[in-house]
Length: 323
Image (tube, rainbow, N blue to C red; front, side, top):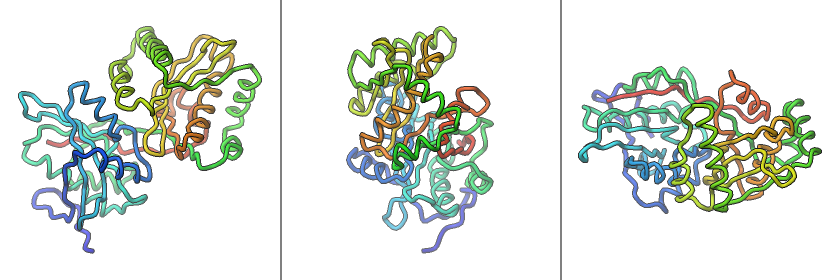
């Protein structure tokens, strides 16, 4: 089949067409077949954003009747008219290694959807690996860089057995895990209301104490409401008392560490190592094949802590915009 060149959208021709999707069953079936899905593109994430006042458009990019990619778009409307839209880690490609030409077709089609300003401003954190070819295709499709760094994280391959994953840890990380296991910590994972309220209270307190605005408690409540069986609270208990906790969200055959809290006794007991390791193993036991460490910057200590789990690191392209 002829691959249309990815050129600026003025007069651009592409075989790629966009179809709006409204059926959850169809979306979930396609989403489940993504080789490397992102949490921000799952149905429940979009519905939780809807509860915060966003509209949600779900798009399939198709060529010759075959779906190439999926994309969930968050839309802000004023008096019913779209004024801004946000795409976070999308579109997502349904083939493991889409060619640059295929990627260009999809992004050209996306750019044309926002032509002549009729849909307002589009802010886009692309679901593309960082690279010069991808940067070039974004510019050729008509997007402009925003100067915002792209998402960086790593994924543990849960298809590997526990021994192989443990052997892959950085030596210092593995030693701290051994210390935590000898120290009497107990792992607890729950979907209960009590566990949820406990972690939300700790998360709110941590944000207030440190003076930062992370993921809002309201959004976390909405996400749990829309994915009650996939929203897990993991805790490390020492003598029956939680010293650390985290929220892990499951989507398709993947899971992601989403929010964490570490109490005053967590560092001494190495609860961070214990909690993250056991959460990944628990998700593997529940059928997950991938565990995303939830994003990091290698310039801070917690980022280096995650890096030392030695997952497959990936870095996405910086953010872009068009209108």
